[in-house]
Length: 102
Image 1: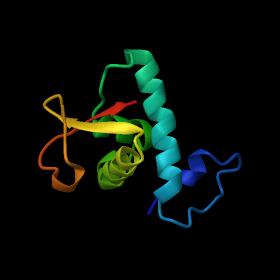
Image 2: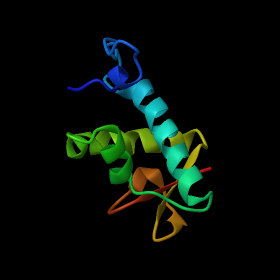
Image 3: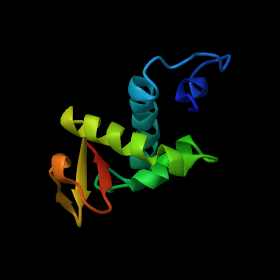
Image 4: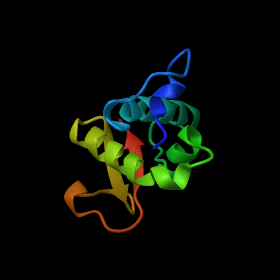
């Protein structure tokens, strides 16, 4: 599996011991904040947009990791996961979601 840590390592050699875990969350938050700053604080983003920014050549394979990272950030109170504009129970997600960084 591709390690996202290479994106943050000056020499692109760091190995991620958690298979995208903590480091993906860090990258997600950075990318998400850039999107929030560009669009405005009340806007949401699709997880696929984050995946495309972080992994342009392999974004579809990374979608599960992106959603898992978003759920973890939701549980930490850093984002809200929504469906049809309403906050969703992250233990029962079905269908497309949006992410709002708070």
